Structures are given as C-alpha cells and as structure tokens.
Length: 279
Length: 289
Image 1 (spheres, one colour):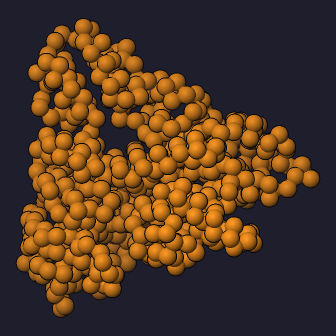
Image 2 (image 1 turned 120 degrees about the horizontal axis):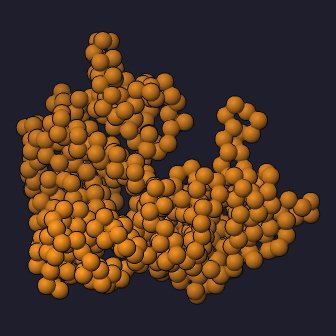
Image 3 (image 1 turned 30 degrees about the vertical axis):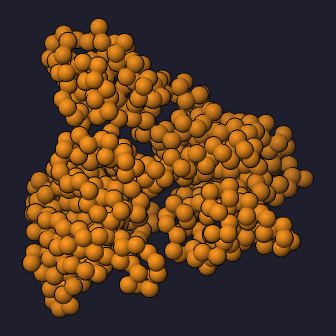
C-alpha cells in the first residue's frame, strides 16, 4: 500500500522562484495489485507525483508512505523503497547503463549484493517476462526504442518491485509496440500481483485500467473507473482532455434515441455489441 | 517543383557485413507552398528521406532534383539546399543549449554573421511567429521553460535561419492534446502567412489528416501510395496492416466493418463518422453478436 497524505510539492525549494506548487494537497491510497492510469495535460503534476512516489523527490509538505515507510527516510528503509518502487522513464536511453541487454538487467541485482545464482535466476525471470531471451547478448545500441523500453522494464523487474511506475513509456514507440508493452504491464499485475501505475496522454490506453486518476493544476480532480471518469466528458474537456471518440459517438447516438447503447461506451467492441442488440 | 526524388536508393554501411538498405527505389515530388506528409512505420525510410531533403546525404543510386537542378551535378552547391531547408528534429527541445531564449534563437544568425540589428529583427519575428512575445521571452532562461515552450523556442531557432522549407520530424510526439492542437495551428500559420513549404514526417496519420495537402505513405523504402487525406484513409485496412496509427474516427469505422461490411473508412471527423453510422442503421444485423 502506498499512502499519499496531503502532499504539496514546490520546485521553488530547489531554487526556482515564482513557480506555483507542482502538486497541491494531494491525498491518495494505492493498493497492492491495482492497475492505475494517471492522465492530465503537460504541467498538471503527473510526473511530479510519480517522482515523489519513487522517492526521487521529497514532499514540501505532507508525507508519502510506501508500505508504511516514509519516502523521506534516510536509512535502510530508503533502500527498501527504492527496491519496491521501480520506475520506467519516457526515454529508455535515460536509464540504460550497460553495453549489453543481459548486463543491463543484471546491474540492479548485482548492486544488491545478491549471490550469483540468485542474480542469474532474476535475470532469466525478467528476460522471460519481457520476451528478451534471444536478445541477451545484443548491444543496447543496436536495439529499437521499443526493445530498449522492454530492457528498461526488465531491469526494473529484476529488482522484484511491488510497484511499477511507467512515466509515459508509449510516447516514443509505435502503436503495435505500445499495445504489446501495456499488455505486458497488465499481465504483470495479474500474474505477479505488481501494482502498475501508468502515465499517459492517450485516452485509448486508459480503458483497460481498473482505476483512472485525472490531474489538473497539481490536484487530483477525478479518481474512479474508466466508466466513471469518461461519463464526465464536459469536465475533462474543460481541463484540456478529451474522452475517446468512441465514447462521444456513443453519447451522440444515444441522444438520437439509440437507448440500447451503454451510457459510456469504452471501446469499438462495446459499440458493435450495442449497435447489434438494438436493431 | 521544389524537390523531385527519382528512383532513389540508399544503403547504410554499404560494403560492410552491417549494410542495411533504407531506401529502395523511392520516387516522390514536393511542390512549393504545400504541406506534404511523409508517413510510415519504423524503418520505412522516413529519417533517410529527411536526411536527403536536408542535404545531409546523397542518393546512391538515384536522382534528386532541387529546384530543377540535379544535386549530384559537379557544379551543384549543397549549401543551396542547406540554406533553404530547415529541420526541426524529433524532440527539438533537446537541441537548445544557450542560457537564454534570445541567445538560443540568435545562434543561427550569429553563425551566419548577420549584422546585429538584422539578427535582432529575425529573432523578434521568429519568436512572435511561434507565439512567444519577444520582450517577455528574450531574456528568459531556457531551462525554466515548459516542454511546449521549449519546443517553440527550438522552432523559432530554425525560423531565424529564414528557410523556405521546414521539415518537422515527429513534431507532436510527447505533446498533450492541447499542445498538439497549438502546434498544428502554428504549422498552418507558417504555411499560410509565411508562404513556407512544410514537410511533416510522422508514424501516424492522426495529426497529418488535419493539415496535409498530400500524404505519401512510405513502406519498405519506397512510396506505397499517395493521395489527399481522404483518399489515404480509404486504404484503412492496408494502413493498419503496415502498423501505421490511424486517426480515431477511421479506427472506429474500420472496426465497425465487422457488422457493417460496407462501412466507409474515409471519415475525417466525428460528425462524418456519426453521419455514416446513422446512414447504415437500416442494414445493421438483426441478431446479437
């Protein structure tokens, strides 16, 4: 469980003047095994929140507890948090450190000082989860962005985290690669019980998550299931976000009297079922 | 015609075991003062075309004409291309290196030894063109700008070189919906008010159907097909098979073909999509899926 307790964060504490706080009085509870998508436009505070959860930044006010350990701890608890909360950045080049795939995935477990056999076990497990076995000895520099993204996630998984934070991992990769990456994230949540927190601008990526958190001007303005959030289309539009087109189409068709359609259509599949059942 | 590419090939690391062919007999032309989109999946050859059009590489074999002149000719000065074509590379904010906005945008003119007063005017015009008021932004520190502002400063830096053509390589990647709308509006303004030629490179069709006059679909190093946005969207099935991201309306229309086999996919807006679905109402199957 991660508890965010009335957290405010101001970058001005780092020397920048006149900036409004990036986060204002945010409170959240994140349970184990949840899949959460965080949406909001640039500057809404999503990335700041994720960096705070990963203990990369510390709250200016309030506190964040990861499994009851404060992220401001300065002792072995900080190491425990770092191990439990894994983060994958937008650009995988920002976090790949070694020359080859296998060396990069090994970097984390090696630095935990684990015995060799356990390091190998973790590497093999992480590579299997991301379908990287055949890439083990390849040079990182020869990989595509999508492949690098998978290596970055494998490197994080080798630390056996409980929480996997994905900070806009799909902005630099193609549609098919992005779908594969998200399917993998959902599988990790289902099979390994890992909590997945995914930041994105893409509304269509949100519908498969259990919970959607909408941020604006440093605050959480909505927190609910995709259906609950997309039902508030006007409010989303007011903060510069749009509901998926299929949801808007469903609303328009309902207004035309096609009342068999669900209130909130989340996918083309649902739309098709609704259209067929009404005739 | 500004550019004409005829049967162009390009192989990286030619003659080595690592040789890989990026362009395989590509032909296309780019007329002046239009917005031309080059769309294709990864490894279709988009970046290689950008390098060719920017005058960074030469075709081998194949011919590239710039304003009617063969760029392989002995007397052709590649500098002509490089001064006419500005490139806004992917994540252009990463290319900002000066301390202040004014200094960064004036880097190009200073390098070209443009007189100070003239350089000042160019910086001012370029910043105003991207929607950043000169007096307000001139002395701002570049590190303190937002992502969208940095992208604008980078574009202003290219404008200050007074190119006739601007190539945008995946300019909307990483922008939120609002930032994306603003960027597309800016690109349209550059074309209309400043009479520029725009070459927009992207792996998806979402942005380009709103601004492109002609779209060329690149696949395996050549042009698979070309047309107006509406003509291109009629090929939705083939585009999806190439892993080219489709606009939302087209995606929905394509998916609806499961129950409405004749559903048109060349729908540009939600209004058009809604209209099509309503038209097709009578032929919906009369059973549950």
